[in-house]
Length: 276
Image (cartoon, rainbow, N blue to C red):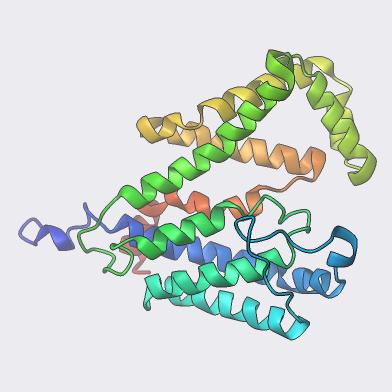
């Protein structure tokens, strides 16, 4: 192996291309799991209750899709992602997936687990569209700025949430009162008994509030200190599992494909180990 050119050496794989495949594979699975529910929600005509979907970039009104058009766009979105997974013209189909994303998710934007929770997906797809490495072989020479941008996008999600907490409550957020209020409010409509039990313990709410704020404000550190990644990924699992269990808030569903940016090395190891 030492005599082989670097382009074939497993020590320098194409992480951008591997991330594109992992991201698309996990997103495909999530879409398949939820498509029936999303289609039924679309057929209920949510615009009659919540009004017309938001304008694209705040300016452009997108056409209202029929049920058959929604199905077609969803199928094309899935097909585009599958082509990325198998490495067939990935940049072209990333562009196709980006266009389909706009029409598909804009039609069901009022759905609780979609609203504000898919915002990173178009950004990631845009990064894949402009990446010169995504079209290359998995062991070709590649750039790495794509992964850095994806990690910055993830960091921004948490950092903005932490800053918003400070803007609304200041450092009083760490007292746990706001967490208690959120848990009780969500209990009234979600009937999550776990949330009610946590809300009854003021000290526990204060600890959780402090840890959450610290996690959100410092997540960006992993960009500069990758050795802390495992610690923060464990915190991510605990954070999103906790919000789902206590408040039925599921950001992890559509953040999971983006989190594949941290597992490209593992994917290359599995490919080498098991010949995947």
